Every structure is written in C-alpha cells, then in structure tokens.
Amino acid sequence: MAITGDTFAQRWGTEIGMNYAYTAPLGSMKNNIRQGHGVTLNLGKITPSKRFAVGLEMQYTGYGYDKSMQELDMPDGNTANMEVTVSNSFLNFMAYGRSYLITEGKFLPYVTIKGGYTHYATDLNIYDADEWDSCSPVESEILQKDGTMVGSIGAGFRLDFSSIFRSASPDRFYIDFNTSVTQGGTVRYMNTDAPDHHPANHDATDAVQAEFVNTQTQVYHTHHVGTLYTSPVQLLDFRLGAFLTLGR
Image (cartoon, rainbow, N blue to C red; front, side, top):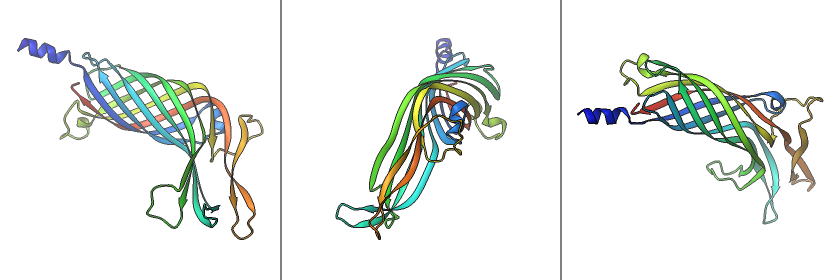
C-alpha cells in the first residue's frame, strides 16, 4: 500500500481549459486595430509538486469584419447579387510554462511565460444571397497572410468551483482569469475596420480593392476591402474561462 501511495503522489496531473479572450493592441498596432475577440484552448501537464505546469495553447482572434452586397460576373456570362464578406484574424500557437504561487486552497494565483508563432490572415468569401441555407461559400480567397515569432508574459488566478457551488468536486473545476502582454516580430496584416487614419501613422502601405461590375451599366467598379499595414506585434489580452484538472 505504501508503494501504491508513493506512486500516486508522483503522478503528473492534466489541465484542460478554454477562455474567452479580449485583445487590445498596444504601440503602433493600436493605430491599425481597434480590438479583437477570440477563444483560447489549453492542454497541459501539472508537476507532482503542483508548483509548475507546462503545455500548449492555441488562440483564435478576429479583429475585423466587413459584409457587403455586390454584383458579380458568373461563369455562364450572367450576373448575380452576392454577399461578400472579408474577415481579419490571427492564430497563435504557443508553448507555455506556469508557476503557481500557492499550490493548495481554493484561490491559486500564478504567473505564466509563453513563446511560439502567430499567423495573421485576411479571408474573402462570396456567398449566394439567394441560398440562405447554404453554409459553403461560392468562392474563397486569402487576400493576405503573414506570420512571426512571439513571446508573452502574464499573471492570473484560478478559483475553485467548489468555493461557489458546494456540490462541485474540489480540486477539479476552476474559474480562470488572466492577463498577458504579447510582443513579437514585424508582421504584415490587413484590417477592414481600422481606426480613423491619422497623418502620423506611417504603418499603412496600401489599400486593397476588389473589382465588381454594375449589371445595369456594365461598368466595373472597385470596392475597398481593407488596408495593408506593417508593424510589430504588440497586444494586451484579458481572458476569462474555465479549467478542468485531472489527477492534481
């Protein structure tokens, strides 16, 4: 029995979590992005001492969206009204290390360090306006994509569900809140919903246009779908979610 107990005490635990993430740009990036809303997924292992955790994190955040109705040429020579959407987003793939300042109790504060890669992309999708039940776009195109390495530091806390709901199992479910600052290399990205352009902002390189045709006059016109920017990655995140721990 003593051997079994010692073996169990040395077992690593598992943590699985999901958070809503609000992203506020910093530095020169705040001239080009208003804010972002996204979700993060975490999967990690907790050391037997319960002091440290290591794992992987994925974050998807959208920061710009535009929808318009346009008349487009079809392959058969006809034209049709189509719904054109342009979405801006980034995807982070990070490895993290977390240190818990307190290892026992209902309230567990911690600090975190992360490093990885971020991918920025702008997607254009065209949907048939007459087919409301169709989830697949008629045409899709990636207008812009780029990526760079990033690093992050942050702090937060976990609150045991059992401190709020007495029926909940202790040391199993936690409310999680954390904030972090992310810095990275230079990246090129688009935005359809940038703040008002300021003369002092020199990050904008060029406007991106898409071409459409007027079915009545057969005159082609362009529609502004975003502006291309270049700046270092500088972001501030606030996150709220829940974690499940196993074997902690």
